[in-house]
Image (cartoon, rainbow, N blue to C red; front, side, top):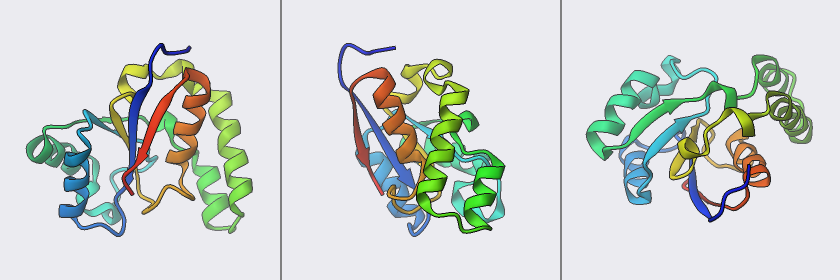
Length: 151
C-alpha cells in the first residue's frame, strides 16, 4: 500500500528519561497518538509507562491518544534469545524482520493509526530497538514516512 504524500512518525523510548522529559518530548513533537509496540506493557519495571498509567498521563498531560499494537512487537522467543542468550544484533534484526514479513504488518495495520503517531518502546535510543526496524519496514512498504526519533 503506497501513500501519496510523506507522513510524519515519531519514535521514543522511556528508559533513561524522567517523566517530565518523556512527556515534554511527546508534547513538543505534536504527535497525535502513542503507539505502544511493547510485548509486555504492564511490568512493574515500566514505572510511569505502564499501560493504564500511561494512557491516563498521555490524555491528561498531553491530550494524546494511546493504542497498544503488540503485532508490532517481537515475539517472546526472539526477546528471550536476544536477552538471555546474548544473540548479537544482526541475528535479532534478521529474526524480527522475518517475523514482520510473516505477520504482514503492512497489511494488518491501518496507516492512519501510525502516521502522525509515535511508536513507544523501552529502549533509550532507537539504534538497537525494534521500533526503528518497524518504521523502516513500514516505510519500505507504504512509501514515504518522515521519521523523527525523539530518543
